[in-house]
Image (cartoon, rainbow, N blue to C red; front, side):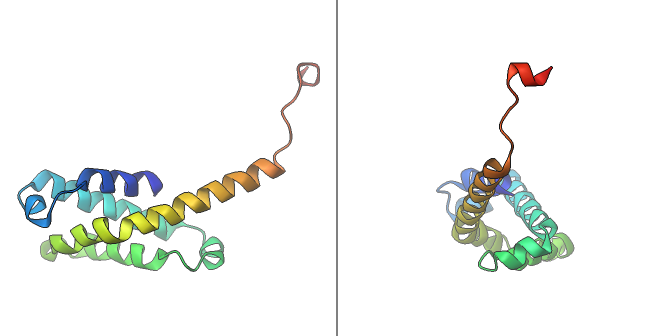
Length: 119
């Protein structure tokens, strides 16, 4: 989720909506990346989502659903606004959660075996 959100943000860069409308491959790529972010969001454990209600899990999943099932009526300005205005905040939240999770994992992980213990 983190990597695909970051990639979408990086690909869009500082392009305007008008520039995006001229680049079909970029439009398709951004749409697909947003779909993947939404799919990843829908796969996050429901207990974890409840612990972090400030993250827009359901909005990301709903966006994916709209893109997948409304392929003949996708408004590229919605994808553009999502990547420009909403993914950066979502990315920040996901990065923060991942860092916190890694800190917790590190605190409960046993220390590595010494050479004498490994044998």
